[in-house]
Length: 83
Image (cartoon, rainbow, N blue to C red):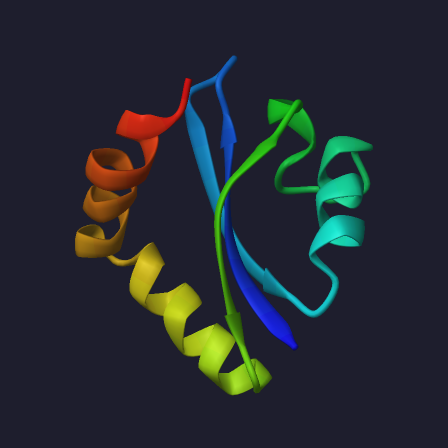
């Protein structure tokens, strides 16, 4: 099983979109500072995820969410329901 996920840093109002086959471990890596691109913006909260059977499906969805329309969807639909 593969996942496309969205993380949010409330402190810095930052969104991170990625994909992984181990969502819990990946979130721990982001929050422990072991991911260079997200290290300055910790802590991260998982706000959205989708599961897929193949990595290519997860990567396709990741690319869609990283688009302008995808980021608008995240801000409008997902972040509006996050405390």
